[in-house]
Image (cartoon, rainbow, N blue to C red):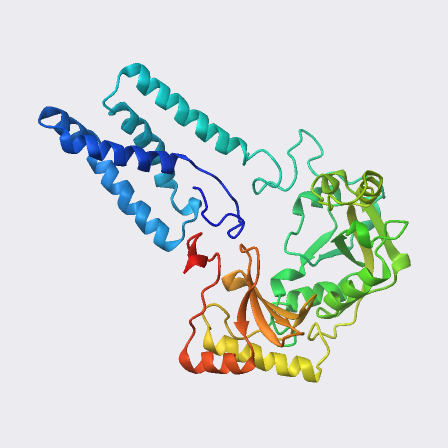
Length: 391
């Protein structure tokens, strides 16, 4: 449907004019229906009243719960039927009904064409479907990685490219261990620990940041430093930039976004560095926090503990460690699809819901303590109905 807060709820904008058109026609039809008598009113009531009542009740229930299209598939099917029925029962000539139907189809076609399910970034499709080589990697002899363990850090595992590597390659996505205390015996990391200890070669495979690549396409010093910070949590570390290889991927180039302010030549040069970094890493088995235990990290951890005690449903306790963030420090809460950010400048916690455009303020340490005593009153912008941010 038409999101009243477009680009606040950004999971997938799917404009649907059928709802607005149906509501308008039902309002117009209700005016005529009041003036009708006898058999004509009975015919309309018998034909449509049951479906209309069901649709309106379920529509209201949907709006006050999620407002997410995938949870209203029955309504998505019914709305088209009811729209055609509403046009059919209008007290106008048949040629006018045909015109209204044509306009309704045209308006909805316009909405669908603006958010095509076959166009990248308009839907969940991240790469284009091809008849062959669905995921393309150019350059590099991938056979040299046979028997190795490939580590990915980001939630997107890019499993579509796995068939391009030898069958002996093993894959581990570390994002599933996010926030866990890896040092506990009960940790799910135990199996990964065994694989790392037995592996002859371990490689990190990471999507490139073209602007952070050197002349050979390998990660820059700053990028390597950030990668090491993320790897340290899992007992991993880069061997050295000289043991990194750049694998260009035309598939990744097609889904890479660059600033429109860059010159054409600069953009083209950066696109040549779109692909993957494959870097040899060491595993020493020393697991721990993503950050060293400092006085700041200790005080911020207490703020997170207060937040978790106040709002355990949104931010369940049990996590350890903090991750670096451009604003300061952060912790991810997969249960509520959110990340809580400690902004170093203002000493304040913010929460960024996955489907919201901007983070929202939670509060400073003394505000968190008050929230802990009074109970959680926090509402995540974009979580729930698309217009919940208006509350």
